Image 1 (cartoon, rainbow, N blue to C red):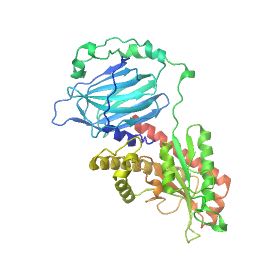
Image 2 (cartoon, one colour):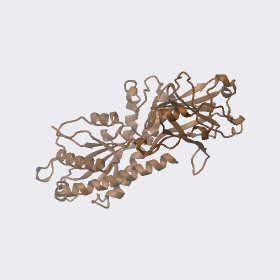
Image 3 (cartoon, rainbow, N blue to C red):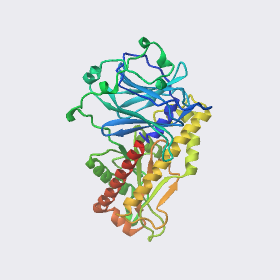
Image 4 (spheres, rainbow, N blue to C red):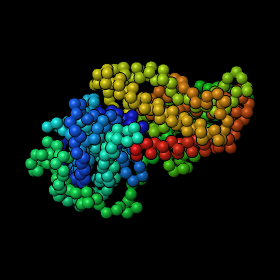
Amino acid sequence: MPRLLAIVAALGALLGAVALPCAPARAQTTAALPFPPPVQERVSVLNARLGLHPDKTRLVLELTDSVPFTVSVHGSPYRVVVDLPDVSWPGGNTVMAGKGLVARYRFEGRDGGASRLVVETDGPARVVESYLIPPRDGFKPRFVLDIARTTPAQFAASAPVAATTSTASVSREAARPPAKRDPIVPVAAALPPPVPPRAAPVPEKPMIVVDPGHGGVDPGAVGVGGVYEKDITLAMARELKRQLEGSGRYRVRLTRDKDVFIRLRDRVAIARESNADLFLSLHADSIGSANMRGLSIYTLSDRASDREAEMLAAKENRADALAGMDLSSENDLVASILIDLAQRDTMNHSKRFANMALEHLGREVKLIPNKPHRQAGFAVLTAPDMPSALVEMGYLSSPQDVSLLSKSAHREKLGRGMVRTIDAYFKWLTGAQKS
């Protein structure tokens, strides 16, 4: 899902520590930086996120300080292991769901004051790059791990050969006799020859869930001439789905594709079950004035966010509070903090999308004259781990808006603006994940 937001699910990764048995390794890369000067506090992971790229999957850890590390690749099961010094991972025992090439990942505490990040992959993998970005541009140090898919034959061809590592990069665990450690091979020996284009995996496309408001026994607003909001929203949702899928860049799911009633919470559940990267709910309001017209976009208000976070933190809701995380075993403080952090990050992404949408859609259609970006407590916007926006496409109390929204040409133009917005959002998101 998100998120992503990759960051949303990744926040919970700070809870994980489940051990897997060691197997013969196909270690591929080593890298290290000198230990920082002694400090009173342990280095901590502030954030973790997964990002999808056409040719690789990227994992980024944001740290309070630079640390040395050693990266190796293993088989049976396929996994990438990052050995670190004693690093603070807030939380408990949670295995995080992955995306792209990453099936799941977790953190482990090791004997002798060391830590380990275990990234399980859904097949043989190679490390493209692993490096640490020093503090800059207001960011803390960041550890970056890029992995790409390879074939079983190429993975097996990487013969285990011992490699030297800097003394500063070897933890106490690493100082044990070589027979007890997984062998490591230099980077040059580990990288397989380029895979033919035909064999390159197709990257996972972002999942967009489009929600046509109302439906069935709930007609929504009744506009000028007796037009129903539920019919307008379904027609627009189908048009947006057609354009998004036609671009070849997205997967799309509608919460409804016919005139049926779906509860508000069920609409959100459909999106979360689909691991949506973005959720858009389409509506067309009606008020007493025929003169008010134009498009506006809503995101979740802070006050509604606080109420939702409090509800999600309740014991009976924790098992499904955040995508890929079961917080039912966590104490009240840990659960509340993780939910709040995830929700704040999601709200920031939602606001970013809304601002981009108004910029692009304002070139195509009329916006309401006063504050077209608004915030409210709509139930369909309350998922804490999925960027969401509600688009009020116009007012059905306005004869002009009704006339436009009833025409396929206008819906096509509106769809083009939404596609451009979604393109811009995911372009921005990819850039943010690279940084």
